[in-house]
Each structure stands twice: as structure tokens, then as C-alpha cells.
Image (cartoon, rainbow, N blue to C red; front, top):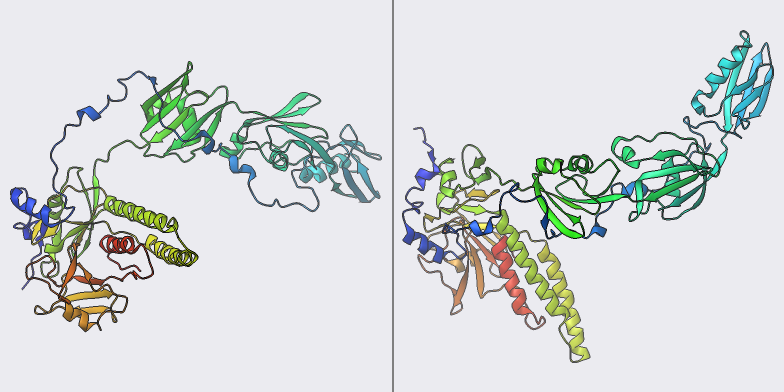
Length: 574
């Protein structure tokens, strides 16, 4: 007989009849601590500001911004690379021949000539019977071909020619201005401007300009560099430096700080013809999800701020000292909800922002023989983050209380030191715990039709006949469920407690995510029929460790954190 798989909403029709059962919902909220129920409508008009475009472009006040000193300039790491590789010969193919260079000229065949010639002050070498040959500012890679062509005008046949640049003339450059270590530095005439800037410790990130770097020769400007062209496009035009040239790094011009959802969250120096938002965006490269821009700055001596859409910001005039924050301020039109566990069909659903649990359950198919539909729960990112924050706060308070505990004697001080070491180890292990963010939505066959959040994971547990026993027991393992068995029977089946077990309270983690703790009665465990602690197939019994109150002073705090971890992550930490 063919099995029929029904939508989950039909299987839960009786139990998820929450919209019409306010009394049942209230009972569920009282049974499950922290249970979410649909909230009442709130009038939020007083919290909503006027839409963008209705306000004047500049408004009094300022937006909170990061400290400007924490925003690095664009290209700040250009001079932070490791050891430079050096050429043993000191010559590269792009080296430009200059005055004083030594060139080997060899001719054989009908004419024999071998001599090392020096480039004169006019940029020429003189070859007998050929005359002066201009080689100044010729790349080293082209030198052989150019000289050969000149020689062949005189010796057309039976003469072989070989030209080689032997040495490059070193030059001394004065690097000054807004650099870390101004001074005179030696190099080659063909070395790049970056080479000399790095020798001088790089551009001062607080006051140096990456866009106005000048080469002065005899007090005359002969070359200017804009390193933004190199940073964005890889363009760095070659230049032949001469001895005693001055490399001057100018002071910064207008600077704008960029933060937020941008690929380049740095401070940018604007040239004289750059003042619009679109020009800044070409450098900052905001991410595609960036929808709005917050700008704060000074206008006419007063602090101002403005919040614009991306399209409005493109034509907005930015000025020196502005702080620009790119922001993703578009509310999602759909929620992404995933499904895990025992289900059929898709594992991912895109639903409207006002979707509730019932809406998604109606889309999920399950096999009722396999799926524990009465134990559905939700894993929620926001809950996991909140659990992690609360755990972190508890660990901080514990650490502070231990490290600041007073000692009245040397013996007590030694005990406090031992305590601090043990607790520090416990804190480090506890920090590694990742909360699951479970939201309990079902209890006693009733489910709360709560509003969903983006990223929610609906977990449909698989039906099982086992109960997991773990924690401080001798042989942690899975035991087959028996209706007539109580907690003590399962504990005995795994060898009993360890010496470090906390026998007074044992955590019971139900399949629906609800965590409860058993209580001892006359030295034995009692789980009443029909109570929230009644063991069911799929439950997990977690025996927590006991804290030694003879050694540790902060027993109460540590015990509380252990229980907190058990609830948040379903694990036992000691």
C-alpha cells in the first residue's frame, strides 16, 4: 500500500490551532519559560522620522563617527611590505641610460674594435669612424639595437656588433616633505619613486599626500606623481632621476573619511576637481547592498549631518573633514527560513517578513511515521547571540570576582592563586561553547504560531526509541526507552555517576528543545507522570559536573554558569 505524505500543517492542525485558542497560548507561555507569543500592535509613528528628501540637505547636529585617527589613509600599507629583492647588477631592462654610464662596444670582422665608452654630459658615446651616438634616456633593453643601427650606417657589411651596458651610475636623491625619515638616499636613476619613498620610511599617514608628489630639479618642477593612479590602475610612469634631484611629498589636501559597507573603508584625499559623492564612490567602492549614506562634517563653523540615499549622494558636495558612512538601510522583502531534520522536499523557503511558523509548516511535507512533529523547535541566530552575550557577561563577572578576592593571610593567598588558575582554565573552556539558540515552540502537543525571523532554522526531529545519557556518568551511551523505567534506571544502565557528578540536579533535554532539571527526593530521583520531567523517547539526560566547594570560593557562580551552558548549548562543561 502506497504511503501518503501530508503537509505538516495538516498533521499539526489540532495542536497548532493557536490563533483561535488564546487561553491555550497563555497556558503554554506559562509552561515554557521565555516562550514567544504574538505581540500586540504598537504605534511606532513617534519613532519614525521623515523620509529622506523631505528634510533640508544639511541639518544641525552631528552623527556618531569613529575616531578619525582610526581611519587609515587609502594606500597606507603601500610601504609596509617586507624585504625588497635587489638586483646584483643594479640594472633592469627598463633602466634609462644616463650621463656617466659605462657601455662596452665590441666590433669584429672587417673592423676590430673593443672599448668601454662613457656616456658624456650630452648623452652621447663617441665611436671612432662612426661619430657620436645618442644613447641618453634609452632603455637598457633597446641599447644594443639602437647603437647597432647607427654603426651599420657606416659599416654596412662584414662587421659584427655587440653592445652591453656595464654599469649604471648611482644617484643621490633628497627625499623631503611629509615622509617619516627625510634625507638623502642613494639609488639608480631608473629606480621608481616608490623605491625612494620606502627608503625614507614611506609617506606620513597623518599629514602626507599620496596625490601630490613632486620631483624638483634645480628648483624647477620636472615630474609629478599621483599614487592613486598606481593604487587603482597600476600606472606608474618611468622617470630618469638625476643626482641631487629633490623628491617632495606635499601636505595632505582635502580628506574625507569613509566607513561602513564599502570595500575601501579608508580616508581619501580629494584633488582640486573632486568634490562630488560619485567621485568618492569611485574610490571607496561601496558594496552593492549599500543603500544610504550618512555624512557628517562642518559647514560655516557649525556641525551638520545628512542622511541620503545612494542616488542623492552621487551629486552631493563633500568637503574637507567630512565623515561618510555607507549603510545598508533597505529592509529585506523576504525572510530566509531553512528546514532540517526529518522532512521531505525543499530545505529552504523564502517567505514574507510577516510570516509566522504556521505559514511555513503548511509548505513542508513530512512522513508522519518518521517525523516527531510534536517536538518541533526553532534555532534562531538572535537568540544564540543573546545567549552568547549573557554567558560572556557571566564569565566576566566570575573572572573579576576571583581575581579581586581579598586574602587575609599568606595561606589564604596561596589558595586564592590556586583558585584563580582553576577558574581561568574553566573560563577558557567555557568561552569555546557555541550556544544553539533554541526556541521552544511546542509543548504537550501545542505549538505557538510565532513570528519568524530571517535566518530561522525549523528543526523537525526524527522519531527514535532511544534516550541519550551523557555527561558525568561512567559509560555515556544511548539506551532503549522503556515506559516503566525512571531516571535512576537509566543512570544505573550506564554504570552510575562518576565521582565528579552533581547528583542533586540532572538536566533533561527534551526533543522539543525544552531543558528541565530533576530534583532529588529522599536520595532518589522522581519523575512524576505527566510532568515536564517525564522521560520520553528522544530525550537527552545530561549529568552535570559538581563544583568542589572545599577548594573554590565561587561555587555558586560556577554552578550557575554550568547550568547556563547546559541550557544554551546542551553540553556539560567542567
